[in-house]
Amino acid sequence: MSQVRCFVVKLPPDATPSIRRALRILGDPYSVKIDLEREGMLEFSSSSPSYALLKISLICPSAVIRERKNGMEQEVSDAFPEWVEDTFVCPSKNCITAQPKEPTKARFKVVSVNPPKIQCYYCGRYIDQGALASQLSQDSGL
Amino acid sequence: MDEALKGRDLISVLDLSGSELDALFGIADEMKKYAKSGTDLLKNRVLATLFFEPSTRTRLSFETAMIRLGGNVVGFADPSTSRMTTGETLADTIRMLDSYSNVIVMRHRIEGSARLAAEIATVPVLNAGDGSQHHPTQTLTDLYLMRSEFGHIDQLKIAILGDLKQTRSASSLCFGVSRYKGVKLYLISPEPLKMKQEVKDYLEKSGIEYIESTTLDQYLGDIDVLYVTRLQKERFADPSDYEKYRGSYIVTTEMLQRAKKGMIVMHHLPRIDEIPLEIDYTPNARYFEQAANGLPVRMALLSMIVG
Ligand SMILES: [Zn+2]
Image 1: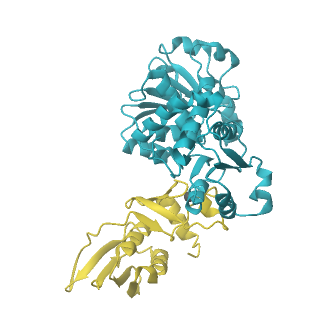
Image 2: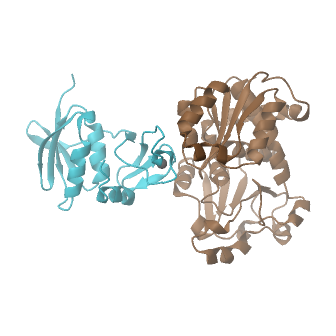
Image 3: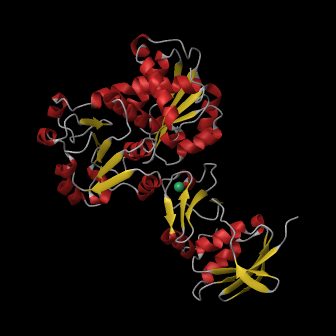
């Protein structure tokens, strides 16, 4: 059984929608437990936090993430996963993932975390910071 | 027969390594012998062709290749017989054809559809073009012509002219040349139809040098290959842009006189008016050979994957 680790995320003041979204995506599949949530701040714990760390960083690149260890906050040096699944939507209407009846699962290669840029596995298109942000503002219900 | 490709899908030309390309081109040389007489290498094997988007050249070339290898062909070429009217999903169509055939060739307007098909099918899937990025067998044909013409692909200076944003043969060729050393690309297009950033990033990552420009003139003395693509009016958001640019993207005999000695002109065909008929009679024209090479190249591919 791997160890549960605790993280403190400081978000910019205008990032409330990002927090909400982060909460929504940091659910069960990544065994993440939200410990504290308030304006500009989020604390969570997980034994396998790499996806959560990646997603917060992609959604809110200016978030400062620190790990709490023995009462001290320290830098996080985890490597990000190379791929991210679900969570985001390919913005191309001409992509197979945009065809509602086809059995695809959105899958993206992480090209860069800061600035955020991911690439659709199926159509090869980039989804950059602007497109990710517009998915957030549309609150697409993911 | 080389076993390395047996059972593999071909979605992007990047699915093949440099040595696999070499092996395939070697077999294509052999296949030229059988392009008219035929063999029975793929006897009792069935190729399914699914052309959700119209194609004449690629489809006929694949079908002829299969027949010359002694195999059979089933499938459809008319999008109106496809799911667009029946409402059947691509996934279901693939499952059906998967049970009938030994290999599936498909073209679809939706990007990533060949990748999905490959995930579903148990038989190999060959992408005959999806969306605006991949057209691996066109690129194999293009690279094969360059190899035949120059004896090598390394170090070639290749200009790609026209609509680089939406022409899948253009982006696919960029991916393909990344398997060779010292190739230099000249990406010549109107500003609104520049090569996609995704492709340019790939070139950078692969160490392929490229120049972007809206005009070809200053490079004519340097390039070995002029690869021409169609410039279509409907691809411009502003139709007046088409009128503005179109003249600069037509090949003329005067241009060829100023070109580097031995420069060849290629085109994935069909052309509209970007290569006027008089160019056909110049020593530079290679687009008909290029198209003809599609047959031995596809015979080699099918034989390696299905054989
Ligand atoms: Zn996509």
